[in-house]
Image (cartoon, rainbow, N blue to C red):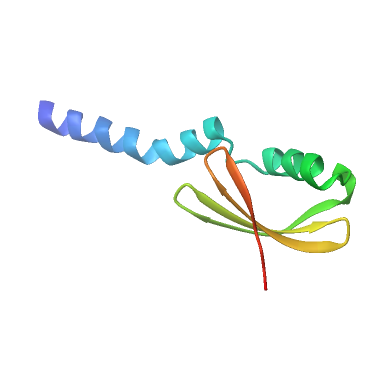
Amino acid sequence: MKKLIVISVFTLLLSSCGNLSSKLMGGTESNLISYIEMTEECPKDKIVIKDKQKAGGLFNYIVDVCGKEKMYKQVGGSITEIKRD
């Protein structure tokens, strides 16, 4: 019984880690919008997230930034623009 409780607690902790780390490390749309506002000098009201994909702790976004469509990758607190050819 003790082993079952330990396994259950461990599983619960592991399953919540992704959600917790994304909140603590910046995996949120508000952080992305603030980052874009500063780096692109575009006001928040002209930044629209058009698509969002999540895989584990990785977030991929397609964002309309002042009329230009751009792609961003966010891992933890690190946000990077994905350049398209």
